[in-house]
Amino acid sequence: MAEIRPTVIREEKVQAINDIASKLRESQTTVVADYRGLTVAQVTELRKQLREAGVEFQVLKNSLTRLATEKESLTELDQYLTGPNALAFSKDDVIAPAKIIADFAKKNDKLEIKGGVIEGKVVGADQIQALASLPSREGLLSMLLSVLQAPMRNVALAVKAVAEQKEGQGA
Image 1 (cartoon, rainbow, N blue to C red):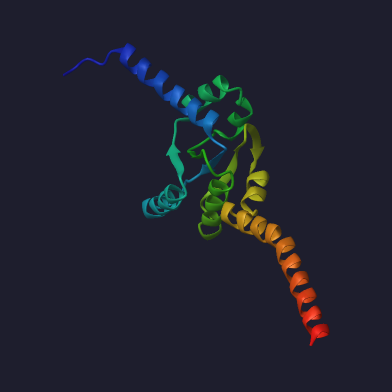
Image 2: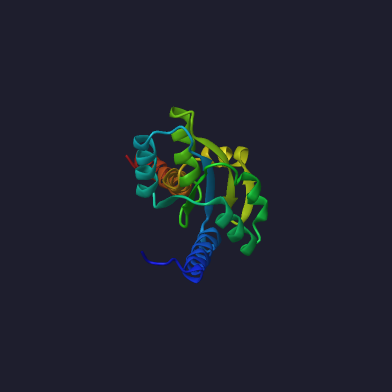
C-alpha cells in the first residue's frame, strides 16, 4: 500500500485554492446555491443547461472556497458557504447563471440561491434574483437593435411621405 505524503496533499489543496480564486477573479457572475434534495438526474439537467450557456457548475469544499475568497478579498461571500454548496461561474455572460439557476429553482424548490458575486461585488440572493429577472444577453441586444433602427425607420418613412407628396403635386 502506497504511503500518502502530506506534501502531495498540500500541493493539491494549494492548486485547488488557486483554481477557485482564479474562477472567482475571472467570472462576471458567480452564484452560490444549495442543491440539497435534488436528484442526480436534476443536477445533471441543471449542469447541462448551464454548460450550454458557457457556465461552469462545481461542487466545492467550503473550506477551500473560503481560502480562495480570502485570497481574492471576497470574504463577504463566506456567509453563504455553509452546508453543501455548488458554485456557478460565468466568464462571459453576467445574467446567464442567475437566470438559469433561478428558472430551475422555480421548478425544483429544493434548489436554493444563497448569494454570489456580480462583477467583483458580493451580493445576496435577492440581487441574484433581480439579475435573473433581466432579459438575456440576446434579448438586450435585440432591444438595443430595435432602438437603433427606430430613427432610421422614421427617416425612411418621412422621405417616403415627402416623395409621395411631391408625386401627388406633380400629377
